[in-house]
Length: 327
Image (tube, rainbow, N blue to C red):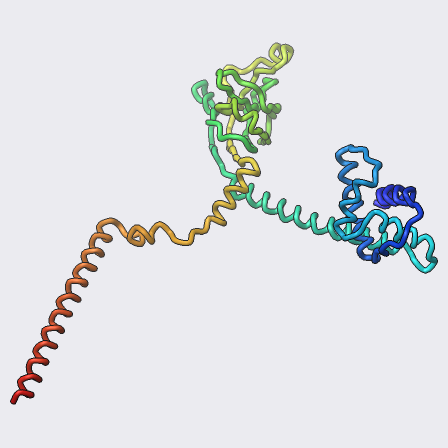
């Protein structure tokens, strides 16, 4: 960080010339100017842009209400005055940079946390098969799966199995392949399968949006001899019937981070001011809504009759009062 600052300071000192009366920049504001200059230098270095001109710093000076000459004058005054210590300004600049870095790091951590929560919430199991026994040729279909493609994202495919102890074949693989629109397949993952003990194979596969456009299905094979060597085929021939206990086959799918975060926001922030039930009978079935409407109409009719009776009573009272007055 000091080397970046030194390059800025060197260019400034080289540009020092005789000057008239200029503003002296306070230490805190000078440190803020140095901070912004360091950020600009870092950007230029990151983008591999070569620029040795002080003109790139002029907008920074103007931001704080100063000119290039003001900066030159202030720095030269540090060199003239014994009581002034430019290192204090540099230390303040470093403090500002570290403070900004800590704030950005905290923001990134929060975003990473949101991403992780979103991915965890969006993850779902699209296949779970357990306790399969393969003993005959007819059972061989249990060792092969073809799944509709779910889209871009991360796939975790796990198989737990135990091969028969008498199975001496070699070259058998647990494989995952993608099927394309033209019905051709391409391998995504393959690992050797083990003998004599319960074993577990796990494939972690990431599929991008670009690759997902051509995929229509995923194929999982627990009995793939496609890549067995000629030597293995000769010395350890493939058994006519594979005997295997498949304890479980599980496929978990997690969409891309962008999709996961959108789903999380849609669920957590999908706030409405007025729900649909405000306009459709408060969620009541149609029959109950009709009944409620009829009850409301009956109440209005009753109110009308009551009002009419009250009016008749008022007329009768007026007539009685009139008769008394005449008498």
